[in-house]
Image 1 (cartoon, rainbow, N blue to C red):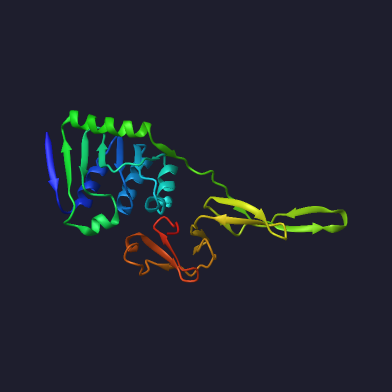
Image 2: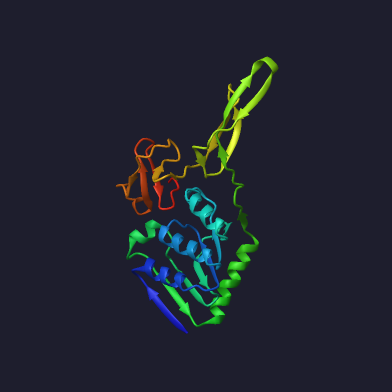
Length: 248
């Protein structure tokens, strides 16, 4: 059996173990906001590795919905459960556990956290895996919303015969984020309630998903708590976008 204890450089230690995964990654942590970990498990999901997360369903975790959607589109699975665990099992062989929450705040604290990494002990790995499966049975699975692609068309009303003629024009604006149609306004156009925005490209230019302005700032100076997540900034809308082009 191989056991190592870490009180510093914890983010790097966890990242290294996640990158070694070949078959599965089980993660049961109360809170999860570290973008570096999300990038790794997204890449692993893309490789076909089974990724399952069990998090608490609270306001903190709901702020990172864009991360969840990105992972689930790649085949990852997310579950809600009211727990306070902080462990991960890689390939049912390696166990990572300790006080460390997988958050940006925990990483910034640096020397006030700990983890233990246990390898080459099948009994312990199976015990943690069994606890994970027990949690899974009592958890609520988070489902990927139905996605819609909405395009705009010109509408011409012929009042004399009371028919509505729809004339399609070349699409200029495509919203890739899921939308929900609430009601129609006085002119008959749908009022759309969106839960976020996503940048998009047309030709060689990149546009803001909200105002469609192409004057985005790349790698802007952002508030400290989201600096590591930010890639683009729209001054017109005061919206920051992460490395995947999703609004924060």
